[in-house]
Image 1: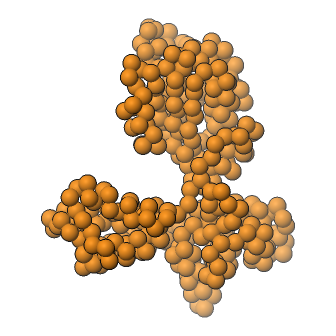
Image 2: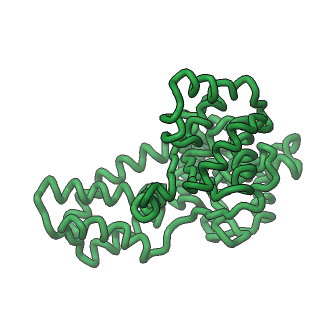
Image 3: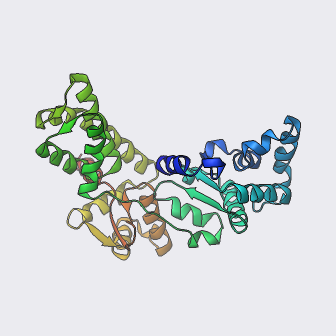
Length: 323
């Protein structure tokens, strides 16, 4: 999201040719809030304060949860987009209120059919399923960019390049250990990068060796343990702990599974009175929503979201059974 906004603002805003509006769901508490982000500041500046309040605020009373019924404001946004195309960025979109999400999706289609308008939604791997639940069928035809763990080289670049830019270099053997320990998982890569950078600045180092990596790993492991504990607690709160542990067990011998194989494992883990095809599919989606398992882009296979988290959950479950 940051990259896209920066690229557009760097190359596309000459003479106000492209507008960028970025928002998170907590900023959209009413339809009027959404219009305030869709309409340009120039348009709002052209009106008197009471006219802006009346024009935008009235939408709350005239706009139902399922469709936009204020053609005047729709036409205003369309005309503005014809003059200055708009890119509307929504982060954490999976946390939107369903009615607000439905309204935004439908409105984006109406505007996009008439003028240059791009809606970009970012969220957790559960975002795709969330969007299908709000009742906007055209979402299926949208361009989707999935998330998965990085390749080894991309992981190495994510560590090396920011350090290099700050005059800090890391030895090849030390980097290899960091890449492997990160499991190519974005958050762990960020955690390693932050820990190494802090260590380099604290000790005024320009070269990081295996010794510094060992020192940084203490902090990485401490933070990571808290992360594991929090994720396990969330699974437990949602009643998914046992089935998650059973899924983790089968992932110890194989890295990827077909959906049908995972659903069978889920079926075996569930009590007989809960075991039916629809519920098994729901549990599979819930595990994906928790990022416990992932369905990487361009494949119908599932893999561990974070292998070490699976091992942690499985070990804790075995400890519980033994005790």
